[in-house]
Length: 199
Image 1 (cartoon, rainbow, N blue to C red):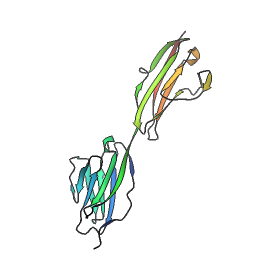
Image 2: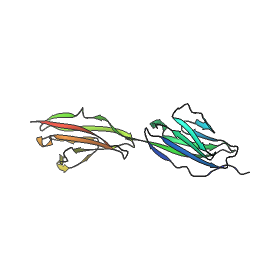
Image 3: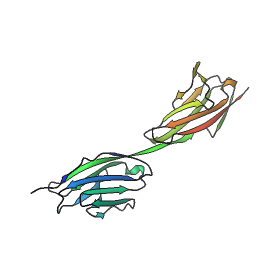
Image 4: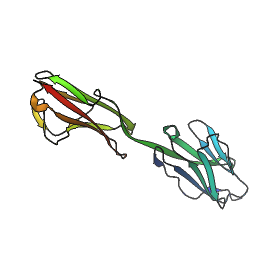
């Protein structure tokens, strides 16, 4: 007897948070067998044949000619990230799995108090900026006017990392500084801090 088989490989998917995900499973020769979608991480059955079992109202199912079975996840959330399995109830069961990666654009979650900092000339200043997103964002500092910064005795355009440490602040350091966070998922985000120097 000719058992059903998977007609196409399943490829992992990457979706930006808030967008819709479409997972597809193509089966040949299904006959009287049934196709189910399962969330592997939580061992949750999402759909069996024509019926959505999941209580999650963002999940729906479409199919064509009993050959292509599509699991739709609307407005993807970070919690949807993980492994999904398409299975056929043969004995033994046949299955294929696919990974849903959910990516999140960067947001700056913690930054130097508000938008300005006041430092006396000759003192040290530390500006900081923390960002989150998935993948973890890369953070850098630069001057808004594009001028070089004198950091640790060197003239630099960019300082990598969450902290910008300026020792022995002089009036030449008085400027607007931008913390820029990016992780390859648009849009990048930035935060502006104005450094006032008292002299």
